Length: 396
Image (tube, rainbow, N blue to C red; front, top):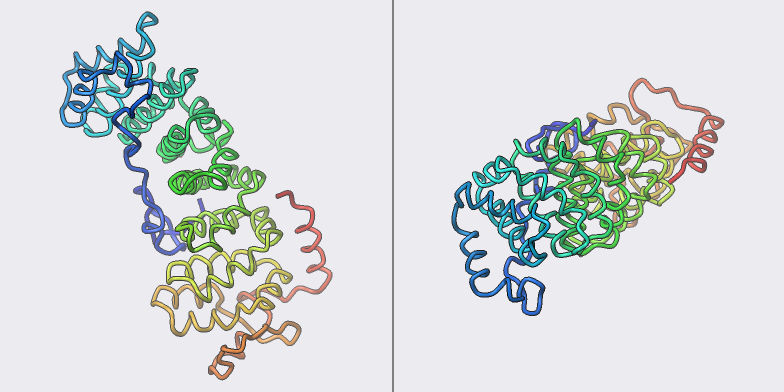
């Protein structure tokens, strides 16, 4: 992915995008309800006090391989009641949650195949336990390839579309873990994961939105997946989240958007969805991290289009860029000059200055013009008109 190296995500190094390690945190093991609630299927006769004791014990202890194999056998046997399978799946899920060693032990005992089979089970709670157990197992690097080899990707995508809210969240996290393997990233996208992740980003709960954004960020390391995300309409929910500080998703959405605008289709869609005003506002009023990533996205959008540069200037981008280059953090000061080595004055375009902007800054005049990158010839109006046609014809 063309994402930059100055930050790390999930153990991978990138460049040019500012510190996103704080914007994204890797999915931890599941934190959904562990003890059956009153009236749930697992609080029936088979999940009585003895069953609850086994579950509580699973939270704190390492099981022997014999016990793990017994649980796996319960999942595989067609004669075992659904209630008992729920309990076995829950115990495996909790064992994998609370012990890294157990994740390896469970996989070695042959649990991956039966747990993957649960991903397509018609019982919603059993499917949820299966999804979450697979996610917990995927926290172990050595388990990722066996999980994918067992055919988990497509049923995880189905669970992402039709599962319980918890199953959808944990399916997103499981796909995120698998997407950390380069060879699986494209396969996950081709299996149809991008549209439901975009849907989760748009309409899910707070945790679901965060899980979806993190999974999308990992998947968008592939250009093919970036195009799928644009076609799935990712720009609108991203911009809505960026414009809503109360969502607690501004940073994550901004980094995902930066990944999307690295392709021409993403830049065109960002402009169509009125992304330039949102980015300019973030450069002006956002946190240091938000300013830095918004500058990178804004420059990405503007670097090859005179029309896009005019939009940014008319939205008042120049004064906050000047302020960022003069008064921002050391990292921010480095980004603006490095990305725009020659911003030469041009009388054709003038910025829209706001009343509180200081027009007397020494180098403001050098910024008040058409944005031009070093070595780039100013393009004539016919080329700009071609850009406008491209923007209109590019699918969202």
